[in-house]
Length: 365
Ligand SMILES: NC(=O)c1ccc[n+]([C@@H]2O[C@H](COP(=O)([O-])OP(=O)(O)OC[C@H]3O[C@@H](n4cnc5c(N)ncnc54)[C@H](O)[C@@H]3O)[C@@H](O)[C@H]2O)c1
Image 1: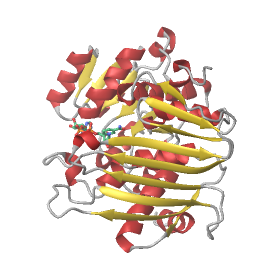
Image 2: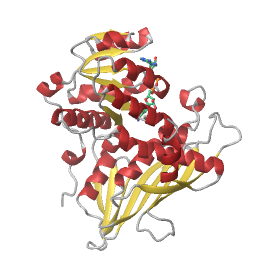
Image 3: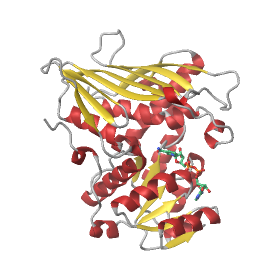
């Protein structure tokens, strides 16, 4: 029985006509652009018209490596190019507001790398500024298009598991390498890397209700390089308090596991008709109606780079159809609210209510 086929979860190649119509102007030619964005665009037939980086060597070498026709160190120059129809923003959050304002002088739709901002207040400023400037702003929460996550989501769209009542993420990894930017970023493990899992938790939620409150704990090792904790555990509630709601989620991410052979990545979703769990390359399904059977599906493709094509492809399709981006800034505020709440919860040792946080943080500007 074919539950899920690669057509369900892998991006499709972009047609020549649509690729030509949506020439990409890449801002930020750093690590993620070179290791994921551009390999994905090359693999799936996107047209990158020009690239820009304040670092001349980064802009030039990226253009040479990927055969990009034009490069510049000046965003204004990039914006003067007619062939640049959309912007792929792959710079760090601090430089985004200023860059968005420059784009506002010659507005183009922008797909912005996650996290939209490192906290809710600044994410809201970017959202409002994009609206004021008439810029269509999408957020590149590309983990939604990673093969395993897309396959799991397809299963949920097929209603294969019945009513979903439990979502769990477990991850063991290592990102405490000294000298890298992420070890110096405040709350990196939650607000930057962890934002993928907060977003996926929301993405897999089929209850029709946004998350309500979160309690998060963290731990910090005595001799670690990172300035902030690299392990968190978050319990997420949906609906009114009282422990009687039909859905809960738990997210555990230990990103300072030195024994690499023990690293692991699992999402598990339980529903009234069955359960599914996946790693990056395997999806397992066990249903109440198929006793004694575990369906195993070996998945094709990988998060890096395929998901980056899926995200950009969905962004371009939405623009072409005149619909909002697949991940709007408005939607992403609820994800950034969750990571903001997780940081606050762990710092203060308290449960954080989403509504209260939104009211307080969004009133600041
Ligand atoms: N899976 C993912 O979604 C994923 C993975 C890694 C990084 N990221 C995100 O991508 C962003 C960039 O990360 P990275 O690892 O590529 O960082 P990086 O430091 O390697 O690259 C950033 C690049 O932006 C350039 N830059 C800085 N300010 C600029 C400006 N105003 N205009 C033009 N260029 C400018 C820098 O010179 C640098 O080349 C971060 O927000 C990070 O969180 C996402």
